[in-house]
Length: 207
Image 1 (spheres, rainbow, N blue to C red):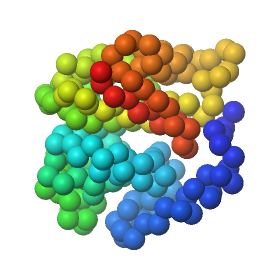
Image 2: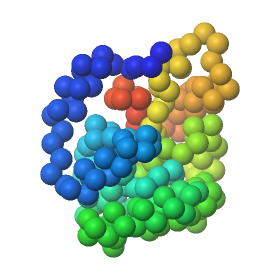
Image 3: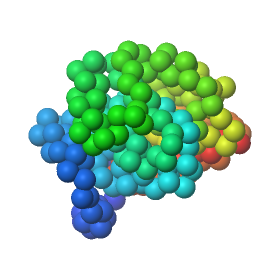
């Protein structure tokens, strides 16, 4: 299964999100040209809204690529910081250029290496955004739970995994996502909801 919602619904929703930031448009063009997995504007718009509501001081992102989702976070921040993490230095270098072009460098911290290990350095994380290796989502949450602030939010992308979460015989990667979703809903540590936007976005409040 390759879809979550009717493609025409996705097209309609996307038409409602107007972007007047030339840097975001440039990042979208790059993502589409390279077939690079970015969250795209529907999820970006969602992240922007959550950030405006939450008004976080610290956002830590695991799996930043060249910074598309982090750019949405940064645009919404008042006086906080977003930490970008990616294992490829070339991706982080591209992110730095985009942030500089958008005058958002002062709102960002750029890290290269293992995202989970890098994130352990940060305390009182208000929003933890998971978009790295799907098989490591549960590991990341368990490793970083004590680094979260009171009433922290966890946001995770791709939690419906192209619809594969409902297959009768899921593969190993899908099983890892199923385990993560199960933990977020049934561990008693979070109040969670999944929004079937694009490939599924999980939003969880630390209890």
